Image (cartoon, rainbow, N blue to C red; front, side, top):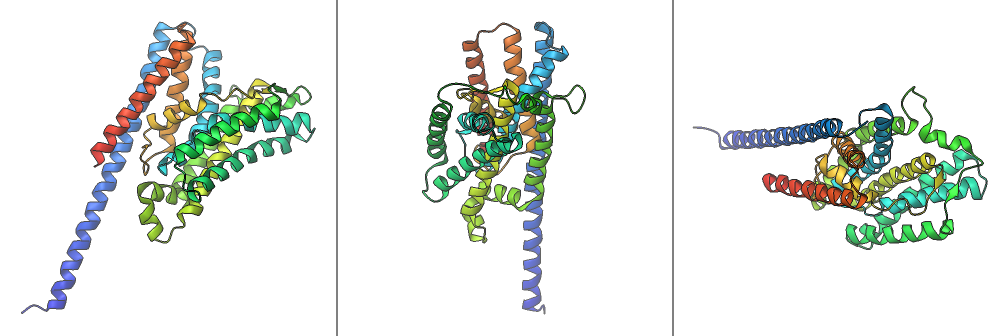
Length: 343
């Protein structure tokens, strides 16, 4: 006659084994879905390049490719930070005007106040971190929906950029080395802005996959309540995630100011939509809990190639906006299909 305790223990072991196998299967499916999504995104990028190379003139010249990479630098840096926010199930609409404010503050520190260039750059980046802190507090403490909190910040940042700059560009004429941050070439043939983007992509990948911040980013996006019950201080980590993303906004502000040689207070309009589209095209779910840095980089390249290719073909700016809008709709639609498949 079998021992009831032994039988119970065996049953428990069987259940645990089954649950572990089920979890492994779900993880394997998630990995496969992510790889398929990234493969589709990369395939889309190749198709776009081939299309514009065939029907556009001078598309594959080094000058044009360099321009695409420079455009990808700004969109890509914004998208890298936004990836963390969207994985949590949030959104940040303030990154475009926030980038302009960070650029303006960099100009104020360097040109208006005459501070050393390094101090000005750090000040511009910290401006983005401060914006992320405010967004995080509004979302976690005041319990505002991320859409509303960051929409308000978008308007505030845009207004502050105009007020602080006096509705006029701030030029870096007395610090010509400032432009080397974006346009210099530490690596021959590769603009510094592109090199900085690659370095930031590696940092973002390591943070997302190897640190507590990355682990809690996925945990909050997958099930915030479960993460909280597990002992995670979700409020604190959400604020830290928005601050981390804000640092990327600050870097993007410095890069675009260095690229243009001036801080343009109205330069950020529309960048937030392209960055968010890049993140979604790269496979990050708007519902949170899923995303990757590699996918975001591919998505940013797709957006830059698309905009540049349309310009090469002579498409009018208003039609370019329509095409970009359609791409965003398609990206969100396919994200919705992926989420339905998961459930």
